Amino acid sequence: MMSHAKPILILVVFLVIAAQAWPAGAQQPPATPLPRPVPRMAQAGDVLWTFAQEPPFYDSRVALAVAALIDAELRAAGVPAFYAELQGPDRVAYVDQPPAPISEVRLLLAAAGFPDGLSDLREVGRCQVWASPPSVAVTPSALPSQVAAQLSPILRDALTELGRETQPCAATQDPGAASLLVWVEGGAVPAIPNRQESTFLALPDAPSQPRSPGISAPVIGDAGLKPPP
Image (cartoon, rainbow, N blue to C red; front, side, top):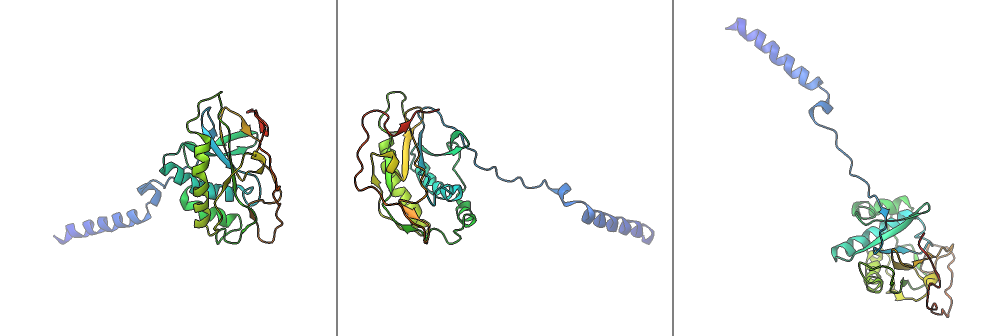
């Protein structure tokens, strides 16, 4: 009996040592990182929206963080409107996926210099939302005016969640005065305002740009717009 027990004991010890020395990667495959959201070229009829390029939204990290919260509410409500941005010369939209995972919103803001949210921003003017007029060139997936009306309270809720309460947004007929713009891909595309100073939310201790007291409505046609590329 003892002559057989010793070889068995040696075999068991060998197997235990071998199991401990075996690489962990051979026991289970390495975790696959989640794919990053990938925008695509917008298609005719897509309803798109974006921020005016002014502080703090000219920082893509801030824009993506706020857009992710807005996008989540739009998708939950079944509103077919998608955040768009310029990547080089191309205009792309987050149609198939959100602009960023909700779990990364705070990380994006921290990377942009806002570790405590947007509470330090100063509201220097009222948010204004512009929606493109009806187009006969393409059938939209939704009416831009209706999307704009839904975006206004959702933007306010998103900013409140990030620590910055604001006034309700107002509608504007001038895309050059807008803080938020909505349009239909394939129709007249707005020239996105590009401002060095903010007309809505200003950075702490930064100057603000006063709005013009009188803004006339654009004439019929494509006043203030640029054709799609």
